Length: 534
Image (tube, rainbow, N blue to C red; front, side):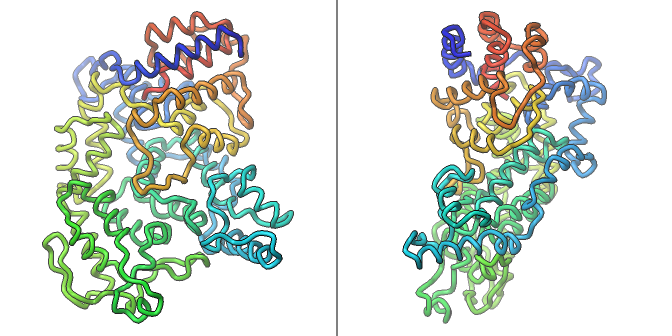
């Protein structure tokens, strides 16, 4: 596996990947009888499986061919109609996924805080500035967080376990769920409304945030999703709105606190209008005033959203030219959400980001305009906006096919799907993604992870992918096995058909033909630019 033949082949593959990623593939033909705007070719099926899901598994292309691509897309747009027992069975052992934030605080966060205080009293280890478990990125028990856990004593609850298991479930769902579009959109919208698990008690809040706030709303109305995030303790804590109070409020004077603009700014810049959405700094202040009093009933106790009148700025506000009368209380924030969700700028911003995810790093303006118009026509119905995009001619256009680069998460999930891998323990894969520069739920900026190729196609990033491809091909990824014994992979044509059903470029085929053995051939297929593009 480490001989000169494979080393040189991998090096060549990295160079090829950097230059080829973004090169258009062959045209996708429309239905032969002209009966539908949705093509029916195998190439179109592979394209759809790569774009609205995490790539084809063995047998997926044939299955979609049987039912028809149009029907498959419609099924994916209605995930509630798709049974998913396989994925649910694999999640059964992850106990924390079904717990409330209050229960997670009781079982994990509060014992960890108590243990740290005991150690501090004994002079062994002073607490950090938040009084919560440390905020480093190690969540697998091997880094500083793991050492703190061991110092707390054998059998003490690991405060990182909720975020570890949340990361495991994300990978398991991506690989095994039949509701592929729902998983892609859950990832998309979490990234859009990003929250970093390393900020204090957010590590116990993210389970409910993804489960109860993001996932149920990904194909609903944007206004409902927006309100769910605005009232989520995870978002309130992450962007500090839980501490935002009217300057003249008694609580604000006692605690030397006032209006915090973080949420108001990100609400408009990232969540709704976009950076060019026409708002001003005055609007940021007015929005922040509207959301004073939107807070958390005890964040470290796992409390939920609460509105506290005594913290609210009851004066008149003007947001984007809309007058909000004095004395509105909690309704001030609701009015802001109505204004922002109904704005044409928001429609365009959401349409652009969705088109960027599904079509191209630079999506066609005409498609963005049509998707934005559909948003406004339907009152922000995200299912209809997504439908407009993923059934459009632009989605299937040759110029856009294969030009999206997979993120590390998409790459790992698609490799596991393509090889028919069995995940017995997903935790090592969480570490793999951290090594690739994409630790799950741990992106500090509110912008989330980039969805464009330039962020993920550096030589160092591609080398990490190649190393994973080699380990996966040789069945050396801990906790993972795939059913490709060496004897079966001697038929390289069959291997290519299974792992790269959409076909390969001449450069990739030549590299695979030169591979010294079947395992190396599989590694090169997984690490090829053809596979790393979606």
